[in-house]
Length: 410
Image (cartoon, rainbow, N blue to C red; front, side, top):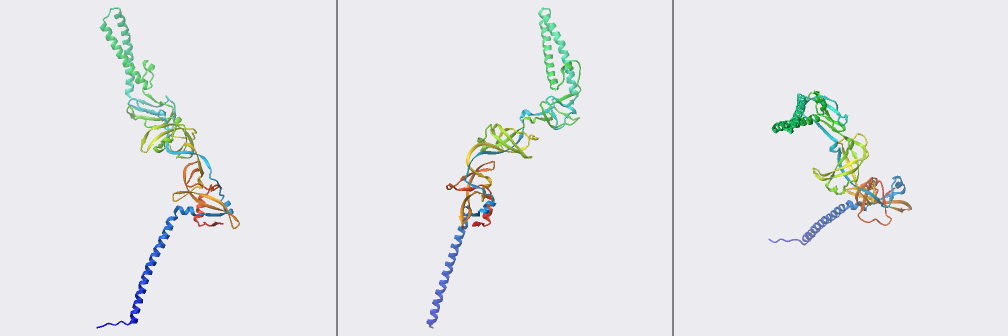
């Protein structure tokens, strides 16, 4: 069976096929153009970033410029002090702290001070009593009297021996007994002197029923660790005394900053519990060994302007002035940080449409040391001759720019 396709139908089929192919190519071409456009748009957004910020300008009329009280001038050179930040606390030297311990086991019969009381060296802070203390005194009295007897016997035997009347053996025995008793008396006297008892009174027969506990230094009572009637063992810590006359700043300086710190440098610091404190000190000692947690060195500084009540253990934050450097710098309010990058604003006075205005542009920089409200500015590229920069209110300028006033801020 033969099939016959009419010429008219064939022609229509060919035209339809060609049309379909064209539409396919057109669709593919359109898809490619869309991708290229999207790619170009994405690429533009990617490049915006910080580079985009520097390409923007903020235009302000002279009136608004003056209303914002903006200050513009050249980028100045200023002498800034290099600073090392440190933390620490107030401390006193070891010789200005004392722990009063019991020399002998005894009962507390009296406490004469409370925490915070001022005491002098040798002043009585309490009393102890115990039968052993009485026995120690009576033992001393007996030994002292026995020693006096043996001393007389020794001198008598010595004269007899020298006159060849008595034997040498008798003299030697007497001498040995006398020396032994003399040593015992000296030992008992040392114990009684530590207990602050009057030996002359004891030799005359007086017996003390309690012994005083005294402060070894001038200062203030920091802690009272005992109660009346309590039995305290030998070496029990009863009182803590601290002398704050030589209180100082004990700073912890980290390893990376230790090489910058030296004796004689000035320290400015604040006490955390006294927010309005503004104190200064001078370094007199830099440690030679590291603490391990954190890895830091102790630095001691003598306080020069003591104010108020300063106590050991108060926490502080400090800045150590380590050096003086001449650098390009601006007031800190001239710098704004965007996306982690610091910027300043350049300024140019222009005339547009017969009106005077200011063109301000962000400029990325690197900042360095800060001191007393100023901060070091390191330029990534040199400024043009006569180029001025804004000295203040960078925060407000960036806010104006973000509001879309990139043309005229009239």
